[in-house]
Length: 86
Image (cartoon, rainbow, N blue to C red; front, side, top):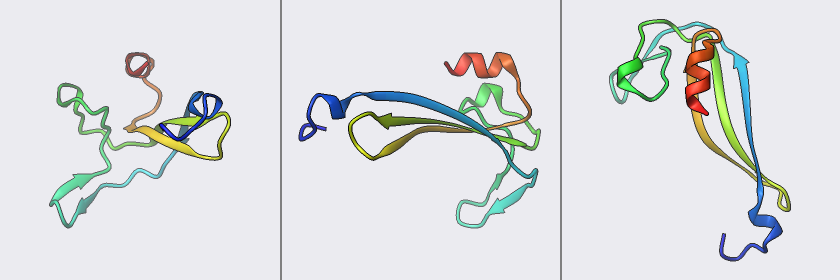
């Protein structure tokens, strides 16, 4: 970022949600289950299969790049959980 001019350092935070197929599988390298709802906090861990993906991305104004900030696997739209992410 030090090589970017002032305008290229600014941008917006975009969030997008999409529907994904419910499916549980085992990640062979880490031997963990993949596909459950996950907000990144063990206290809110769930056994529900995720059916939505939520992505926060930074989009630069003066440059042609975007940087994913966070990705969450969710089940439906839980307004309380979504509100806590902001």
